[in-house]
Structures are given as C-alpha cells and as structure tokens.
Length: 506
Image 1 (tube, rainbow, N blue to C red):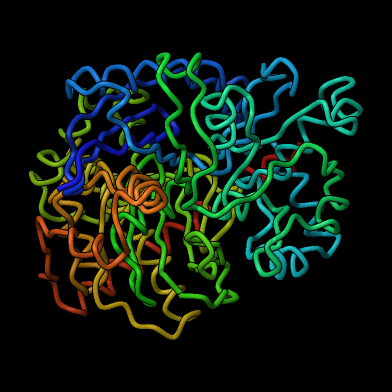
Image 2: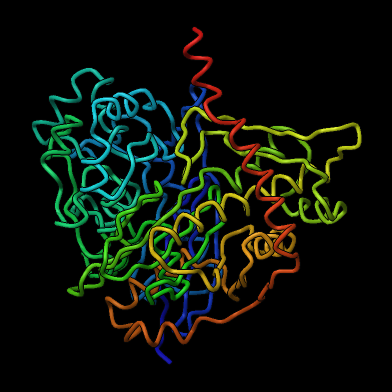
C-alpha cells in the first residue's frame, strides 16, 4: 500500500468539492461548499471566478483537516470542472475582467441561430464534434469580447487569458505560471479541432476570437507543474497532474475503458457518455462527439455524449422555487407514495432542451394535472423526467454507434434515489448499476493525476477497484414501457419552441 493521498478538486456548477483518495481508491475525507449563483437577466447565469477560487481553497483546507493530513502528504492534484463555463482574466494581474458565463447561460441563443442560418452547422460538427448551441464556450467568449469596451483590443495584444474553470484553477494554484487546459475541456469550446488536436484557425475567425487568449492544450494525465507555495499553504511544490471535464472524469472514474461502456452522471444536469475508443464517431442524431481523455503519450480516446441540461436542478427548483420540499431526499418518499404517474409529466426545459433535441427556445412544462394531483405526482414526474431524457439520449447513441447498451453505470447525487434508479432501469429495459463510490467525477480526476505521478500503475489496476453497490433490473413489461415513453414524447413536443413564439410575436 502506497502512503499519501491524491487530492481531487471537483469544481461544480453550484459548489466546490474536495476529496482525498488513498491508494485503495477510498475516500479519506470530503469537504464541500456552495458559492453564489448570479442571474442578472432571464436565461443568464454567471459565477464570480474569484469566489470560486476562494471557496476551493477553503474546502481544500477543510478536507485536509478532516483527514488529519498535512499538505506534504499530497502526492498529486487532480482537477475536474464544469466544462463550458468561460472565464476571461487579466494576464498581468490575474484578476477576472468580469463574471464567468456559466454553461447553462442562454444569452447567445440568437447568435447561434444566426450561425446556423449562415450554414456553418456541418463545418462546426466536422471539426469539433459539437452542435452550434449557447451551451459551449465559444459564443460566450465572443459575447464578452463584444460587450466589454476595449476588451477585444486587449485580447488581441495578448493581455487577456481565456479558460474554462480548470484553466482558472491551475493558473491560480501555480501562482500564474501555467495557462493550460486538457484535451477534454478544449473539445467543449467550439474552437478546437478534435481530429487534428489543435485550435482551429477557421473557427477562431468565424467567432472573431484572437488566438492570443487561448491556453495550451495538454493531455488529461500528465504532470503540468507544481503548486506555488504562497498559494498552497506554504508547502513545497505539489504536482498538478490530472485534468478532465467533469463528465469525462466520471467516465474514467466509472472504469468505462472499453468501447461501448457507458455511464450517466446525475448532477445539476445529466450527462450520458459512451466510450467509442480511438474512433471519433460522427453523430447523425444531434449527439456530441467529444474527446474522452488523453493519457500521456497514448492515442486520444473519444466518446459520444448526450447532454441533458436539467435534472438535479429541477429538484432544486422544487425546493427553492416552489418551496414544495425542504430537502432533495424528500422526493423519494413523495414519489414512492404514488406508484404510478397517473399521466402527469414534467418536461424540465428550464434552460431549453439539450440532446438530442437541442431547442434553446423550449421551456418547462408540467402537464396532466387534475384535482387528484398531489405533491407526490409532481415529485414522481420530476424524477421520471430524468429517466426519460436519459433514454432519449441512449437510443440516439445506439443508432449512432451501432452498439446495443447492455448496462448503464450511474453516479452523481441522484443515483442514491432508489425510485429514480429503478424507473431508469424500467424505462431503459437494461440493468442499471450504481458503484459503491458515487463521487466518480472526483475519483476520475484523482485516477488521472495518480497515473501521472505513479501513485497507480495502470488502468487495469484502477479497473479492479470498481465495486458495485446496487444493481437494478427492469420490472415492467415492454408494452407499459413504450406507452409511458410515447406519452413523454408528446409532452416534449408541446414544450418545444415556446420562447421562440414569444420572441416572434414581439
């Protein structure tokens, strides 16, 4: 057994989590803290990048204290992050030039519609594997450069840095010495050619983004540099050695190393990824072709991805918006009280619809209400919406890849909800497996860092550490499964285009 721990920073949409993992892949300690969400206008979501950094350092200290571990016992640091959130900062001072624009933000919907109308959809998909949507970083960066006086000229002079949150964290942890990102995060920007593995000049010109602001792209598992003692508790330099976007990190943490293996992470949104090996499978189903990871000098590996924008945040809406519950865990008992949905459906298009629909103008819909509808029906409809959206994505994935899903590995906060997991198995018609450690996003980042510093020797060693907690099997018949799914699709069609009709009427 090797001594020491790997420190994993899981910088999410609503908070920062730090976990310490030992050589057995077990959690030694965990610390978490939320940070402020800013909603300056409808459809806009922003974060204060400096607050994110302060919160991250606070939870690092708390995790070390809880485990009774000194900073010198950390053998490496892995980082995983909310991927498409864009930050611009001053290269000299290290200060953000404004708030970060979050992946959920929809302010560039009209810009994306214009790019589509100009006929750029095929070009973008061919080079990036992505669809043109406000979700991704590129149009966010363009918006910031266009809407802050003098910022574009400063960017052209190389005075400004752009990064997703991983870049921001590494820059700060290393005392401003390193401006990098990894393959997985670069592949989410609309600016990176995932087949040629380079920032694409044609895409940069299309969005009018100067190359001078871009980070260097590095493998997902590699020693990038060391922490700055002034930033990191006065200790000697600790290797920062692993980076992956949150969903790719979860795929790695779930040990989905073989082609055709898939996972779904239930967080603020949900993200289904299927490993496609060294082949970048082009989607005909409006899914995303994304870089899964690059390990050192090994060939880059790819995944198909379906991004579901709202799952866990719908439960937060029940709690904070409707005040229907006090704690997320209440949804399980409420839903269990009504074993059938009684034709109540919820389409959680609170920030539009992601894969495979990609409708930024869709809006949330709760339908099928009667005088007999209770809180239980609404809670069940919210939970079931997560499973329906997952099936939408998986069916598209199967058509693209030609691979029939045999099982789905699930993780994230909502994977502890047995009502949701059983219904997920029911509506998919396959086994659903939940591992003993559901913090697979942070675990994946730790594994990537640990491989780079020799804390773990190989992926084979890591795969043996994956352990099952609960396995769910389908309990409903095919006829019922298809009837429920058909009604879901009818509700989705009613939700589509709602905000667009309002814009056109104005």
